[in-house]
Image (cartoon, rainbow, N blue to C red; front, side):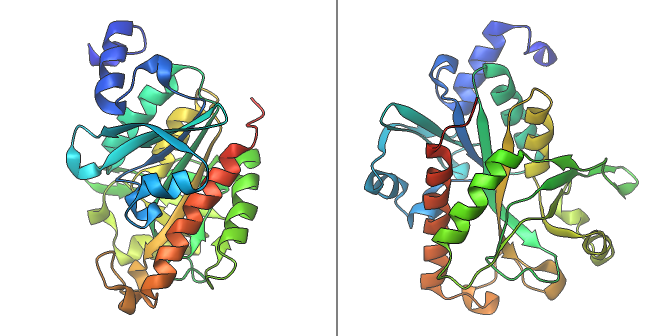
Length: 274
């Protein structure tokens, strides 16, 4: 039974190899997860971007659903980071987080992804490094509020914020640190719901992050997030809109994504303390 994956080692190893793309014994203690691909962080060439900072790429793994992109296993001076693609949406996030929670030895996980900016002060391409997040839910009768907020790891968040602020200091984009909300499905994003979340102090929303925080936090794995506001739903700016409509120059967008990658490497090069 799939629900016995925590007790059935053969079942676990099969799905870890299938979904994560490496043997469980190869999984390093630092993992960056994203729903769909890392290429944007490297201006279209992730390998070149990390190699420029002294990291070598040991493995490139295509996600079982190729549309989600590639995962990478990188190394520098004996320290490894797995850049792992999990898939878009809460169901994919739950499965991916469950595998990482069971593998053993993981000491730090950072979620990197795009989000809807709903805070009054959040602009397109601003960053939120959440201090807390809530995982929403839905039923056949519609949306319902999530449970109480879950705290992100303060030490990991405390390394990410200055690293991002330093890398993005010339981008005219703000690094926020506040509340985040993971909603069950984007079809649930009505103006009424988003305004209610904004009034409660939520800065950003997405489809995955709080799922990782919930599953990994339950087994004591330090988890943090870096969420880039790719759309502003309450201001009529959608994910697929042009950079011009979002008020972001193409060069600035590229520099912001590259700055996120540099900040992640800076934060994860440091000792996790585990």
